[in-house]
Image (cartoon, rainbow, N blue to C red; front, top):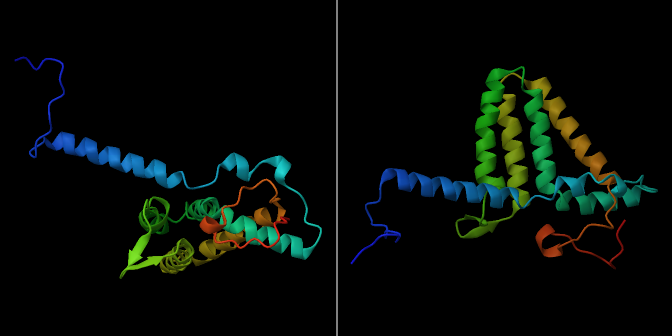
Length: 187
């Protein structure tokens, strides 16, 4: 009996190169799935979706809707601003890159909810804890002014974008974003 053209069955003692390829494939799929949870940048920066809020309450309403909706994008934007601010501080940049790997593992590339002692940890808690941890560790690297300015700029950029980005064209998923929608009127 010939076996020409058939795919051999894998055995438990598969070669290390095959195991590496499987591992690389799994990591590549996780990266695609993890970054897939962010909103499209084109949607976030669509010029037709910006407008000046007429009242403070309208701006606050937009903030309450846009921040959870674009939270992955906002986290990436704030971390990019922090990265740019650390280019002239190599030790801080190395620490930041190590912290970024922790961010990738705990927030950006997770495909399942984070469990701690049998309890599901909400993504918002992870973002807050990781932000505080990142800033605290980076402050130990003698780039305090750069870090504080970068965090302030990041918060300001997020707040301005969220306040000026209209919310009518967003497809809200209240369960995912944690929003409670009263009356269906969007700012």
